[in-house]
Length: 285
Image 1 (cartoon, one colour):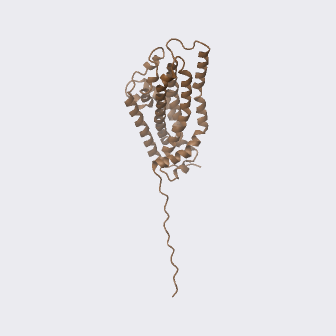
Image 2: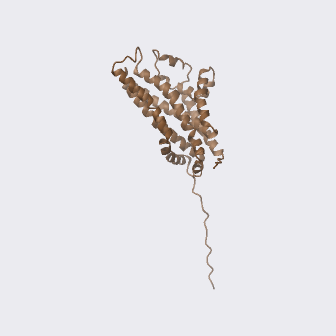
Image 3: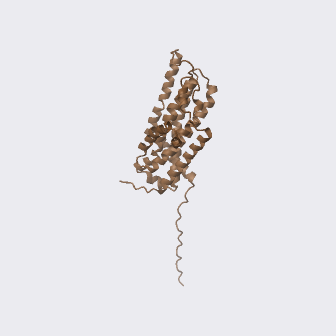
């Protein structure tokens, strides 16, 4: 009796299981960090953040040659506090977040590379989170060294590094928190709008300045309002520079500031992830 050949048994092909949200985010972070760190945008911003270092060097040289550039109660810690607030908190942090945060998704769409990220076996929310972490690491690497060098140059002028060191640690934490909050807000803007950079600049230089100047509750719809509750420790309390601090009379408490910034960060990232998950990306060739 002839033996019938056995029918081959085929096993249905199984797709590789999707990685967890955090593991996928770390994978996207590894892919994005090098590209973000060595981009032309980062090089330009590094040059911008070299300006306060140059100013600090010039100030230190003038003081070394006994040029009367600082009179009365003005001290190195006071000047550092003013530069920290005026340049870094009110200018550098929001501008960095605008240029990087709005580009997290928008650049991928413009360069027609968004499909390569979305076809990987990771959730779309992980793509948003991974690129956001890449932004945060890159901006911290650009900003924090500039602040530390400026602190080393300016604070010793009629001041003490040892006494001011706790304030420096607090300042660095404030900047990290500010970069995280602003970055989350502008990640949402970049994920939901077609011209996110224009809207981001209008938000930073238009809406925030207007809302902070007006009485009432409009200021609570800004990131700068909550950062004010963390910054005044570095501001001078006596002398001419105290005028700037007097303009910040209505500031939230530290607890309210931390809660507000935390809510803005989490809510911004969650809404950005939802926007990317629901959006259909049709790229024009």
